[in-house]
Each structure stands twice: as C-alpha cells, then as structure tokens.
Image (cartoon, rainbow, N blue to C red; front, side, top):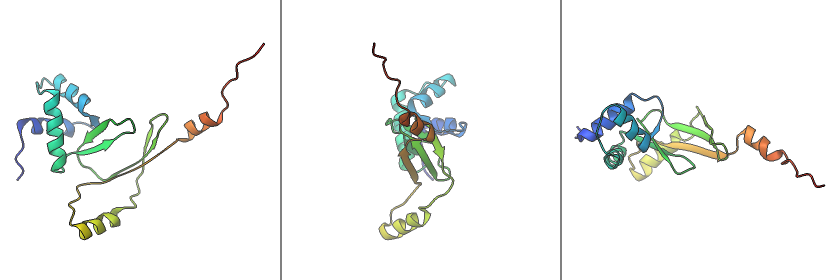
Length: 137
C-alpha cells in the first residue's frame, strides 16, 4: 500500500470531485474555497509525488500550462494552436505499441497521451480570409 501525506490525500479528494482536468493554481484556489489551508508549493509537491506513483495524470497544453486529473482512460486530443480548442479523439492507435514498449524495456507505463497540434476548421478559415485592406485615398 502506498503511504501518502495529508496534502496528497486532500489533493486527490478534490480531483475526485472534478469532472475535467485542472491546473495546479486552479486546484489551489479550489482547495482554498473549500477551507483548506494547503499552500501552493505544497499542492505542486503533492501533484508531483502523485504523478510519480501513477495516481494523477498530467497533460501539458501548447501554452506550457499543465493540467492534472485522476488517471482515466487514455486521453487523445486534437488541439488548435490558434484558438486553443481541444477535441477529444476516441480511437487509440497506440495500445499495442504500449504493450510492446513495456515488454521490450520493462518500463512501467501508467498512462499515455496522444496529442495532435494544428488548426481547427474555423481557424483555418480565418487564415484563408484576406485581412481587410486599408483604403488609400
């Protein structure tokens, strides 16, 4: 059995009540609103420890911000670099690769993410539309 600190247990309790991934800072705010006095640095330390044991998964956005959630089914996304919209992908083309990697390297895999970055249809359209020209007169 894994021994956890009180802070780690509090972080897990809050994550269990959330329906979507959250940043460490937003998690800290959420905890404060619930009356928890855990500091921001402690929240980051707790998330790091939980991540290393596979109890929390992390996803990094194009902005560099990390989002944390409880491990769920593998997450796969299409992310627009312009507007930031994220579209979940249901199919997983890498499960067999994951098994092969585990066997070949004896690497304990907790979860994986698959992320494609590009432009959504709306942003592609906005790039194709010529900017309004300045009238010269």
